Length: 226
Image 1 (cartoon, helix red, strand yellow):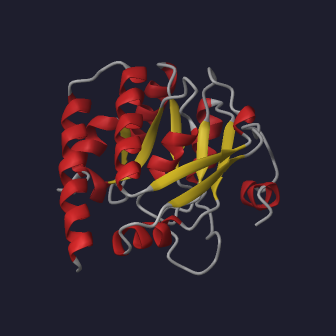
Image 2 (tube, helix red, strand yellow; image 1 turned 60 degrees about the vertical axis):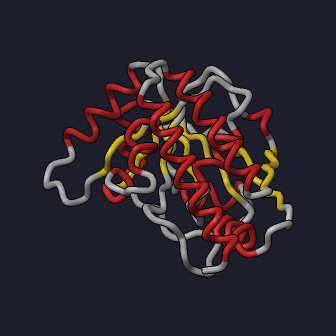
């Protein structure tokens, strides 16, 4: 590991836990959104990464959504956060158990607005009940439908079906977004090349009705020409 990586890793660890602590003291959803956005802005600036949002006019600032995003890098939630800057959309991320217990991300994830998905549980009723409760409060739900980071060379891997259940049970319109830039490679460049400035592009798609009968992944591919 080079000095640049070590320095950025220490900074990111400090920043993530600092904002995790700030979020612990924050209750109101839009204030959590503000703190999350401040964190994303600060870290991305340190990495010399800017975010270009395409089709932002498709966002309804005051609407609730089930937001679907592709997932190729650990900074993807930050990119989504930046795409929603000028909206009142606050969402809880569906997060894996490993992130809840992570010494790096744990405090931030637990306090920033997340719903734990524990695949080891035999019953999922508690998971779906928590989602329903948050939706009733006026919050959106954010999910990576691929279920894990896409480490393949393909632009997209197969969607898991759980997101359809969430949309149907809560009558949430689906908001597809696509991070066109390979964020894992962009992060690698930021860690290895000190003075390189990069732009990550995220595109907002057309809203999909929760009752849509067609295959959502196929619609997603068509929408973003994947």
